[in-house]
Amino acid sequence: METEIYFLLHSLGIGAKYRGFRYLAYGIALCMEDEDYLLRVSKTLYPKIAQTFQVSSSCVERDIRTAISRLLDPRKP
Figure 1 (tube, rainbow, N blue to C red):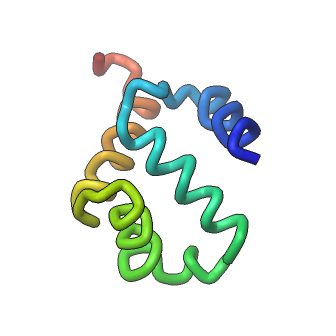
Figure 2 (cartoon, rainbow, N blue to C red):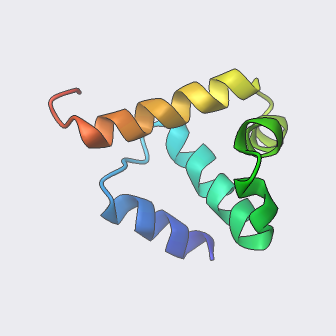
């Protein structure tokens, strides 16, 4: 399943060089296992990702936002 998620993110144009790429991949895997994570992203999903990667929830949110913003604005490096 991990390979398929990575392929999906790459096909969307999200590069693996961003930390948010790994957080997104792990978050998608969690949501595929338990859809309830989608109901409380800030309260359950981000903290679970943060715990796994030993970072803060705000770091997870920021890095995911950065990876997505690079996708939406290709002028940014």
